[in-house]
Length: 181
Image 1 (cartoon, rainbow, N blue to C red):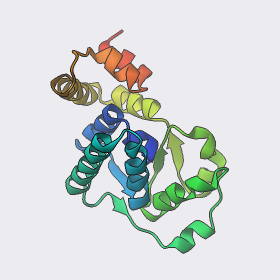
Image 2: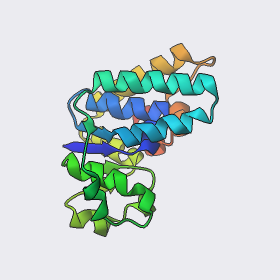
Image 3: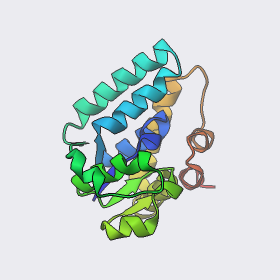
Image 4: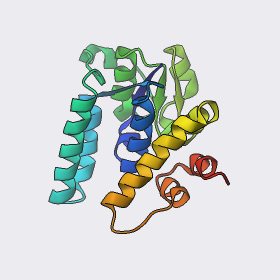
């Protein structure tokens, strides 16, 4: 399964780590475009020079770790597409160019299911997407979650527990499932 990751699910670190951790175990193939990564870097600039530098380093690592993930497409592809928010058409164009089955995004209103169905794809929010994978492969997703938690605790100035970390990352259903509550 090929999955286009929208900027809004790449930029939050824990959400990105969960998605790519699951992808790294062969569950799906992640896709993005240069423009999607560019949106991430522009958003990170609002955090100041340190945040921008960190995002540039993380984006470079992403590209190095996932060299086949970047999708390129002709600008003419965007011209034939429509979405309620024209600023999101590039996401749909990248998904089509990469033959994605699903767009994972938090912006559900900007990607109407009927429009995506006409193009042969669907959308999912990251919490539902990861929860669905957890239902099929709880050990795999649990292992990824433990790795993400360990990394967060290594890099953070505080000690995290699983459920609060995933809830803060806007993954509440997954948090409850992985925590066993």
